[in-house]
Length: 546
Image 1 (cartoon, helix red, strand yellow):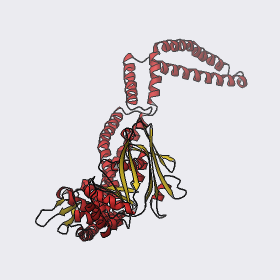
Image 2 (tube, helix red, strand yellow):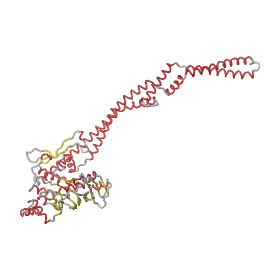
Image 3 (cartoon, helix red, strand yellow):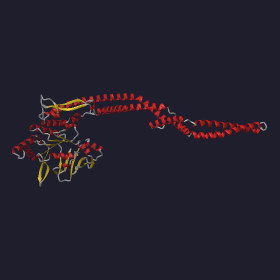
Image 4 (cartoon, helix red, strand yellow):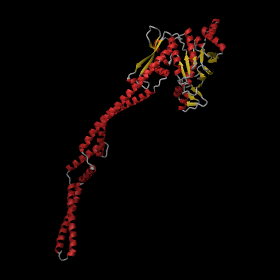
C-alpha cells in the first residue's frame, strides 16, 4: 500500500507530506484547489513524463517521494531482485527530482534507475481509474478476463512460440531457396564454362614455360646451332679415333679394348646430345602462330581464374559441382519444414481452442458476478456480456486466437454495444466501479485511485457507489478524489484540499479531518460556499447512514 507521499515545489505545493492508511481514503476540496496536483505528483514519482510546467514558479528544483509497503509474498520483491535493487528493511521508496529545464532523475531506494523501469515498477503498485479508465479500451478486456479467471496461458504461449519459429524457419528457407535458385543457375553456368576450356593439372605453369621458350626461340635456336656445329667435328673425330684404335686392337688387346669401350660410350653420348639438341631446337623454333595459340589458351585460363577468384580452376570446378549436388536435397528440406509448420499450427489451434473454451466458461462467471454488482448500483436492468471474435491467422499470438470486448445493454429494448460507446457518463462510472469490484481479487496492484468516478451520478446512485468503494477497500487500499458528499461519507479517512493566497503567492494545502470536522466538509459539499443548518443536518444523516 501507499504509506506516504512527500511533495516539494510541485505547481502550487511548496512542501507537503501526507500519510495514508489502509481502507478508503477520500480526498475532497473546492474545484481548482489542487486535487489533480496530487495525482500529477504521484504520477511523477511513479515514472510519468516529467514536464517543466510541474515546477512551482520561482523554484529551481522539485522533488516527489512515494513510500510503499507490501506483504512478503508479493511478486514485486522478485522484480527488485531481478533488477538487483536493495530493499533492506522491506520498504519501497520511489523518488523523482525535476530541474527547471525539464530534466529529471529517478531513484528507487536511493539507487538510480531509468524512467522506463520506474514506470514499469510503478504500474505494479498503483492503478488510477477515472472517466478515461483503461478498461474502456478493448485491448484491456482480454487481460481482465484472463486475470479474473486466473487462466493459465502457458500451453498456448509455448505452442505459439513453436508455431512462430516453424513459420519463420519456413519463410527464411523459402527466401533462401529463391536466392539459391539464382545460385544454382550460376553454378551450372560456371561449371559448364570451366569444363568447356577443360583445364589440366599444372597446365598454366607449363604454358608459361612454353611461352618463355617460344618467346626466346630465335636466340636459343642460334645458341643451340652453335653448340650443334661445335659437336659435329667432335663426333667425326671420335669416329676416326675409334677406327684407328680398332686397327691396332689385336696388337695390344689388353690396353686397346678399354679404350675402344670408352670411345664407344663417348660416341653414343655425343650422338644422344646431338639428338636432344636437335629436338630442343625444334621446340624453340615455334612459329608465331604457335605462340598465338598458346597465349590465347593462357589468357582463357587466367581470365576464368580471375572471374571466379581462384588460383585452381579444377578445385573450384569440383567445389561448384559438389554444391550443385547439395541442391538436390533442398526440395526434401522444404517439404520437411512445411510439415513441421502444419504440425505446429495444428497443435497451436488445439491449445488455443481449449483456451477459448475456458475463457467462455469464465466469461459466463464474470457476467454473473457483474450482474450481482449492477443491482446495488441502480443498474439492475443493464445486461453485461463478454463478446468473442476469432482473430485471423495474422492476428494469432501467445494469448490465443480470441478477440474479446465487453458489451453492455443499458436498458431492455436498447441494442447492446461496446462498453465505451453505449453507456452514458453516469452509467459508465457505475459500470467501471462494478467491474473493478468484481475484478479486484484477480489483480496484484495493492493501491487503487479513483478520480471523480462519480461523474454523471448523484443521490442514491452516488451513495451506492460509495458503499461499493467501501466494500472494495476491505481488500485493497482505495484513494478516491470526489465531489460527491454521498461518496465522501463512506471514507475511513478524509483529506481536504484547499488553496490560499498569501502575499500574492498561491499555495495548496492538505490536511486530515478529524471525525467531528467531516460533517462540516460534507455539509460544504452539499450546500456550497455558505453552509446552512439544513446542509449540516443532511451531512449528519449521510454520516450516520454509512
